Image (tube, rainbow, N blue to C red; front, side):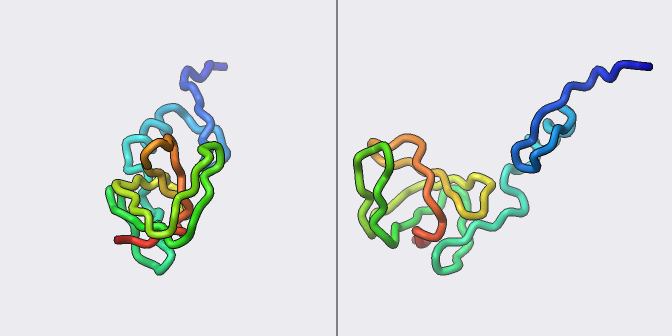
Length: 104
């Protein structure tokens, strides 16, 4: 029997092992293709959008509360329909739920 030289990678999105070639093809395509992320009022969000918080949010691990009305600039979509990645002064790796923001 011939040994398969192709290596496999675990795909967290599907929970399956896929070939490295297939993983490379997925990486080459846009990360959030087919996933629509909508804010609290139904507006479609895109990478680079500015959003405003609609509720006071306690940030775990930062000892800080983000107040309602806080402007978050330059968001990034994560591929999850409910999560957005963003930066805010003094907080690294901030991930917000789309239900708590409104597009500006």
